[in-house]
Image (cartoon, rainbow, N blue to C red; front, side):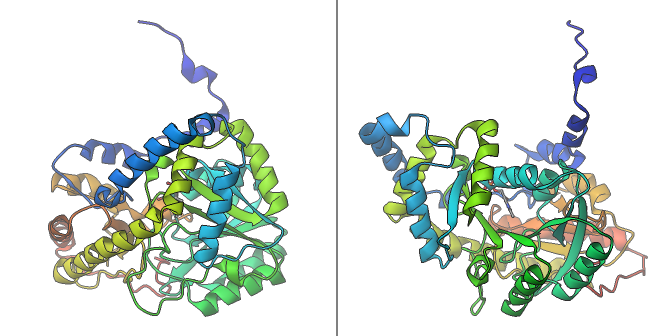
Amino acid sequence: MFTVKYEKLLAGRSDLFRASEVRELLKLTEGRNIISLAGGLPDPRVFPKEKLAQIAHDVIAERGDKSLQYSPTIGVTEFREELKKFLSRKGVKINSDDDVIVTTGSQQALDLIARVFIEKDDEIILELPTYLAAINAFRLSKPGMTAIPIDEDGMRTDILEQEVKRLKWLGRNIKFIYTIPVAHNPAGVTMSVERKKELLEIASKYDLVVIEDDPYSYFIYEEGIDVTPLKTLDKEGRVMYMSTFSKILSPGLRIGWVLGNQYAISVLERAKQTADLHTPTLTQYIGMEAIRRGVVEKTIEEARKIYSVKRKAMIEALDKYMVKDAWWPKPVGGFFLMVSIPSYEIDTKKMLPEAIKEGVAYVPGASFFANGMGWNTMRLNFSYPTPEEIDEGVKRLSDLIKRKLKGKTEKIMPVNLFRT
Ligand SMILES: Cc1ncc(COP(=O)(O)O)c(C=O)c1O
């Protein structure tokens, strides 16, 4: 066949887009009879299919001239107005000098933020663990990454302050703190109000910007959990708040947004222009109508009930089957929890092919640890599988771990919960 050597043409940075082995392995599980506790997919049962079909029809039939046309990079004006009302109802504070940009999923927001703010050798601060695709998006700009451990109350702000002091002393240029304060991915924990306040105090004291990523706060399964966004507590305009329709309506629409300082948003807008001109106009109109007709709020309500049952199934299955001394913080919200296996000798990445053979898949935890650790952890998803699959999947996984741990006495006593 042809012999063009594309490898020789690649830019140096393309090396940073390496396919992850784990993703390749997980791809192999698709379509096979394997219980997946791996992805972060919503349960398709919660998609409001008929209502969205009607909305899509109406938006094209009645407003096709606009909805099928190009639209502003920052987003469709009417949709942005509707989005602001939706955010206000959710308790997200919008300052007079704030603006909102619609992005192609919130993943694009992460990518744009990286491109606009981070230069090689800048420093960014993240949670340990944190959302792996955020690490990957930021990594492309080659910053130093300082990871702050979390526990059941979210980011350890005492360690945050020590680390900020250390970085300042070293003369590092800290660009922002990235956090998923509520219903964390991967850990399912939520930052306490005290920690939120401390985080903002530290940001203020050291003049830092905070990127608040909030896809999951719509799904809280316990009473008395405070979900006030950092954006609302912030009095100095230093929080950029991002969220998405992916978990509350449909990820296929690819609609996310960032709310924050007008000037910063205008720079993200310029960066987005070269990326994709704008987020699809059609899905913005569909999203707008879905808010107006109450479909989003209704979907959230129904989805919460379904996910709450599945989360219970996962906690019960772990209690029933998982090895003694394995540890997982109870997820108060979101789609995931993270399990630490009580031995340094089990590397969950190496164990994954064996788990797949047993008919169950998960995401090895190391990818969520910006400091390269976490090899004895794994992220389990409960939003997608059925309660029966959760029970069976956790059983298969636990049996495998028990077999592997046989005869091994070594045990981890986590001091800081994720600081393995
Ligand atoms: C914490 C977090 N941020 C961002 C995203 C990206 O979501 P999307 O691009 O679908 O809006 C996800 C998706 O799982 C996520 O968990």
